[in-house]
Length: 392
Image (cartoon, rainbow, N blue to C red; front, side):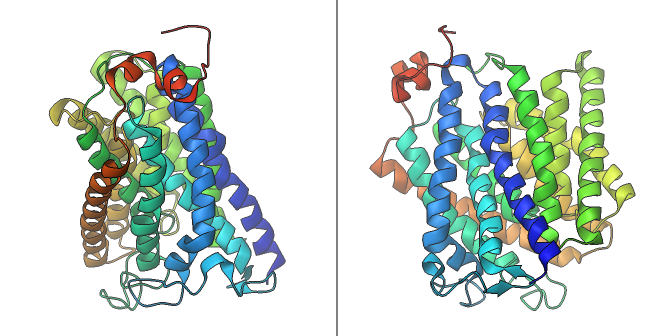
C-alpha cells in the first residue's frame, strides 16, 4: 500500500460522490420547472443510495471479479474475502471498491436528465438498478476489468483507451438516455424555460470541481499523471465553455448562463476518456471543438430528430464522450480499430440492453405518469412535497 496514493483516492472518491450529490442534482434540478425540482433531487438521491447497495452486493464483482473476458463473476459478492489489508495495486481494495462505486452512482444518475418531469418513480429505481448491473457493470469489466476490449483482448496489445469513462460512463448513459426518451415521448409542455438558472450554474460548478476526482483519481496514484489529468480536464472545460458561449452568441445574438455552463459539461465529458493520454494543447483543441459540436448535437436531437431528451443527456454526455474517445486515436495515443470498434460494440450492447429493460420494467411498473400528475408536477403528486409556495 502507498500512503500518498491512498490519501489522494480517498479525496477523489469524495469528489466523485460530490458530483452526483449535490452537483448533478442541482444542475438538473435547476433546468426543470419549479413543480418538478424535488422529483429530480429524489431521483438523484435515491439512485445514489440504491447503486451503492447493489454495487456492494454484486455490481463490483461483475465489474472487477476474476471471471472471464466477458463477465467478472460472483466471486467478490458483498466483498467477501476483502479486508482492510487486501490490495488493488497500491490501494486498499476496499478503497478501490468505493472509488468505483461513485462511478456506478453517477452513470445511471446522468440518465435522469432524459426523463425528468414525466417518468414513474418506481420505473426509475427498477430500471436504474437493473441497467447498472446488466449494462454498466459488464462494460466496466470489458474495458477496465481486464475484459475482451482491454489490452490482450480482441484488439491485441492495443486495447481500447478510455481513461475515465468516455465509453464506460458517457456513451452508455447517453445512449440509454436516448432510448428512454424515445419510449417516453415528449413532455406535454416542453417549452418552459429552466426555473432556476442559478441552481444550474452552482451544480455545474460542483461538477467541474468534482471532475478533478473523476479524471485525476482515475490515475489511481498521486503522481504526475494525476496532475496532468487534472490540468487537461480544467483546460478542456474552460475552453468548451467559451466556445459554446461564442457559438451561442453568433447564432442567437446572446450568450446565456445556462449555455456557458452546459459548455463546461460538454468539455468535461469530452476530455474524460482522453485525460490520461493528452497534454494541455490537445485539451485546448478538444474543448474548443466540444463546445460547438455538442451544441449542434442539441439542435439536431431536439429539432432534427424531434426527440425530447429533456436535459440533452445524449447531446452533451453521449456525443462528448464518443468525440473524446475518437480524439485519442486522432492524436495517436490509441489505435483507430480499438477506439471505433469498442464504441460500436458498447453502443450496440447498450441500446439492446436498454430497449429490453425499458420493455420488461414497463410490464412491472408504469413508464410514464398520467396526464394529471404531469400537469400537477411530480413533486406534489408523487412525493407529496413542494419546493416553493407556487404552482408554476
